[in-house]
Image 1 (tube, rainbow, N blue to C red):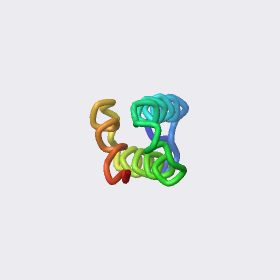
Image 2 (image 1 turned 135 degrees about the horizontal axis):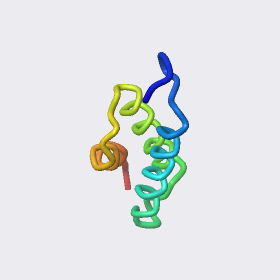
Image 3 (image 1 turned 45 degrees about the vertical axis):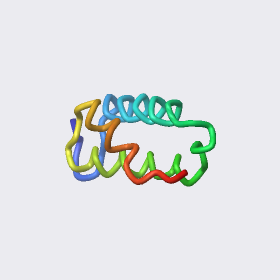
Image 4 (image 1 turned 90 degrees about the vertical axis):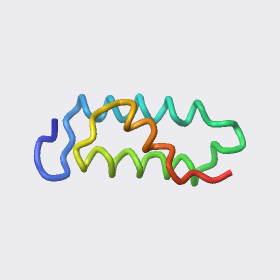
Length: 68
């Protein structure tokens, strides 16, 4: 639930944090770079601000565009 334009509710932030940890932890160690961690966070924020709340869709979208 968004509280307003570009404002996420605490439960949304909790979900995003859990998905972020899940995605980063699932990466091979060589891919856990600062760049990829930042990309995961940006992907999650973009998806959530577009209204996505499905955990599977967030997980898949969070990993998009990562590099080795």
